Image 1 (tube, rainbow, N blue to C red):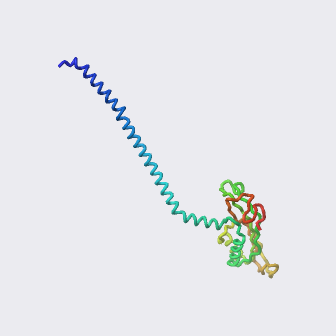
Image 2: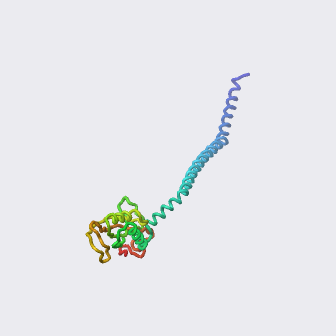
Image 3: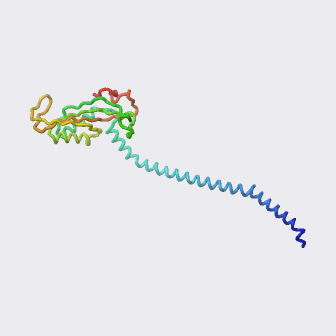
Length: 220
């Protein structure tokens, strides 16, 4: 066989085969591979989304399980800082403390209600809208241990949150009952307890009222 004459034909056939294979790659195989790659990317993306959704569902399920406890905490908070003044209810608690401690309540004075803002509370406190502080002065009289028990109960044993800001104690001499005051013995104390009760109503503004008490007006 004369290879020198067949060589151009062989080279031409080989080149034609290469061109045909290249055409098949670009027009048939390559799109299929790209589609497969896109499918893998979509599958991985979907798998990642599914994992995110599963994590969110687990979080929601956990929060749902915690919901009763959160509602209990919220109910307790609403009792401690209610949406209305409820002066009568608070007075009932003070009367209960009077009976339990043995101290005699001379007076309970509600003063001007003030809306609490970020400026008055301080920059580190996140103050909810519609929160009011109502100053209250509770004056009690009796044996030292009784009046101190009343002070302790006022801070820790009432459903209504009461913040004690200051107090002033005056020692008493022996004296008979008069003017609505019980008899006293040497060493008895009269304690004026200054503090605050709070009202939270997120729908209120400084122009609205709390239990019929306008902000900036006497609460009694």
